[in-house]
Image (cartoon, rainbow, N blue to C red; front, side):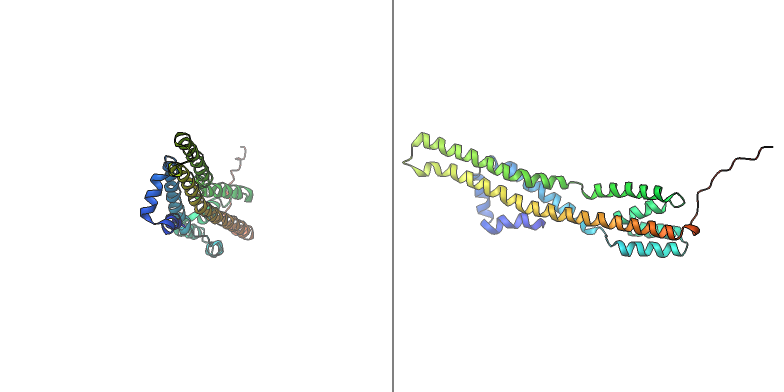
Amino acid sequence: MSHLIVSIPLLLIGWGTLVDYFQRGGPVMYPLLICSLAGLVVIIERGWVLHRVKDDAAEIISRVRRALHARDLEGAVRVCDTIQGPIANTLKAGLLQIGKPAEEIERIMEIVATQEVARLERFLWVLATVANIAPLFGFLGTVTGMINAFDRVAEVGLGNPRAVAGGISEALITTAAGLIIALPTQAAYNYLTTRVSKISLSMETAGAMLLETLKEMEPYLPRPEIETPMAGR
């Protein structure tokens, strides 16, 4: 997806022509350039991070349950430490609360899961912003380009179409640039948010399976020590 933003304009018009169009597009092309670079950086960074996340909840919880059935709580925690990632971190948070009421374990896992989702969604707002404002910058360039064109008409009259062609060209170039930036950025944003949603669902599934396992094994799990009052003398 990250290559898409770079390749589309190059395939359409070529590098040399792209530079020429940038110069002819006027000052609005500079914020559009910033938008395209910001979107590209976030797509590459978030794409790499989310690609590395292990989201196979069934495999992770299976290894944790095997350790728990073997009465090896430390082994279950080690499984989470080995795998790492949002799902494993959520399960580890629950395992470290074993001995407490199920409601407390569930609450802790929900807190950790919320924090993990926030980390996964980091910088995605940049893509949403770029996808929204790039066309607006393009339309702004259209307005300024048409203003320049009409200014030229006022100066030289309608008898010289070449004089107004520059303003009209500026108007069309910025509109096209805004759309070329916005379309792949919106597609990347949709893909990445869908990926985050899938990981979030896997965390919920793994958490529910862990709670079910803990309920089944409740008689064999350690319980918190309860202080009893000393008998009076």
